[in-house]
Length: 99
Image 1 (cartoon, rainbow, N blue to C red):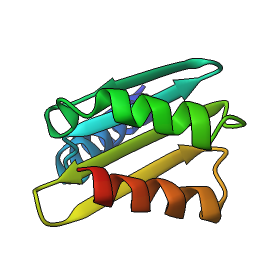
Image 2: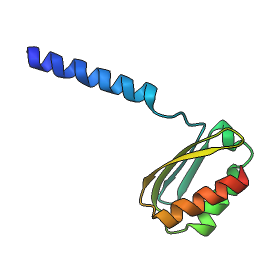
Image 3: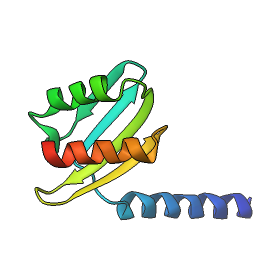
């Protein structure tokens, strides 16, 4: 019982640290099959352009999550899913120009 309790406490501390130490994001783009979801205050008014980019320029992308932070000068991105480095760079270039 003592080991289980210790494990749960350690797991809780790790999750808490992960939650507070990960970099912030103010936009998120999620692609699942043919559905593209664009959210966040940094992409307000740009969702249509982002949707068109993913539909026209990256039609083969099926499962992707792009989280990022844009402060008006610097762009930080995190990618999850089946993207090549070339696709990641294309997305990065597009977002830098668009945002």
